[in-house]
Image (tube, rainbow, N blue to C red; front, side):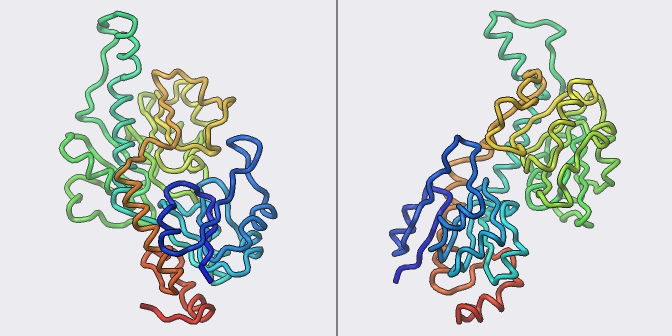
Length: 339
């Protein structure tokens, strides 16, 4: 009997059927792009799954997992696992498996670089001048990036790649991460680890690369923004919920900070009535959580994703298991050995 793969993520999955797996796509819920299935509905639609392919919208918790009796693993073709209750999965001997490729990390850092430079060089303003047939005067000048202080919030794999992208720009780089105590050898001459307060007070550009957890939810709010320079920009290519969007809107409207470049939002797609949409587009760049995506990145992620699905289908433990503490129970449950 073929292993059944039920997917909430409907693109790029043809190779699963080529590998002899039975693929069942869950249709989008009715009601528009922000509609979600209830836990009961989603559990029922995924009931036959041996492997469940998660998306970046539905939160997969124990109530859903309990409705899927043969579930071996939840596998995603991207990095973030914040839409999966990992402890719930571990308690049920279910693997959570992601696809953390170098391409995936680097393209997020590249997107943050683009947003910083576009804001620094007032790209939207310059384009508007040209389209209006104007050359621009002294009041239309932009800022030099050299000599600025770039603060990196979250110094994991993406944060470190962010720092590597900044080499050669002659900027000061500071970083904060409560779980990182040392800077890698190749970045030691560039990056200084500092407190969160120092990061906020001294950054000209604060680029957010923290994962979304209960601990980091809204870690950048009104109090934190008030510590920043009035000339500072905040960049978020991580997860929307790490930053309080209303607090960012308030801070920009009141001149507490100068602007923002945001590619991640608490609700996606960004609702049409979001306050962020009302802010000056010359000071605020909004992109639909798509800026880091590239053909090369998708190809790398999908290659890792396919290998992980096949490994689980064949009773093997994939290298990218997030909850490794689930391995003994998973092996006992499915009567396999580590290979």
